[in-house]
Image (cartoon, rainbow, N blue to C red; front, side):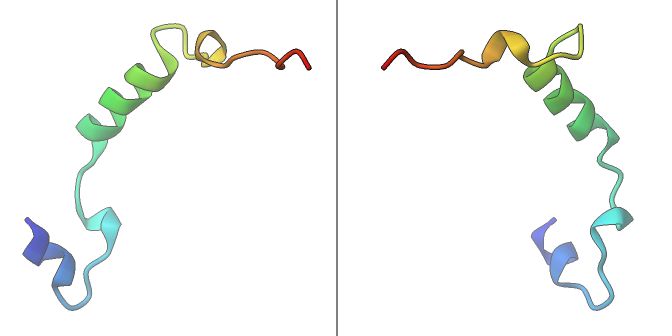
Length: 45
């Protein structure tokens, strides 16, 4: 797999990353598609 990245003329769009992106999108944004539940509010000074 790594050799593919060293191939002359390789471009990242040559690989289908749909499954990878779908998994990360779900982990980061959840089913509602928002990241607010993972972001902390401003710290009290």
